[in-house]
Length: 81
Image (tube, rainbow, N blue to C red; front, side):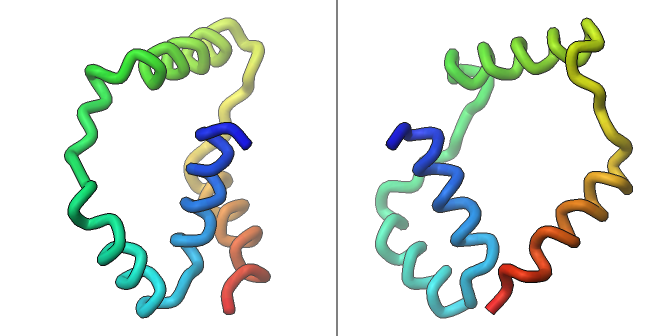
């Protein structure tokens, strides 16, 4: 499993986990937390450039924030416990 996939799975879990579980996870990783400086992350910047180029070229069509928000809320309704 790639690091990106692991991160996505963790994000999805944390996003819907109850308060007690989120606090427990934070306690486990608290000493490891560092502030992320995205301006120095080469992999992140490369991905950002790729996505920006796709959007500018018309290869990828964006959607308005309200539509994205609507889709996010609709997809998360069935995942809450």
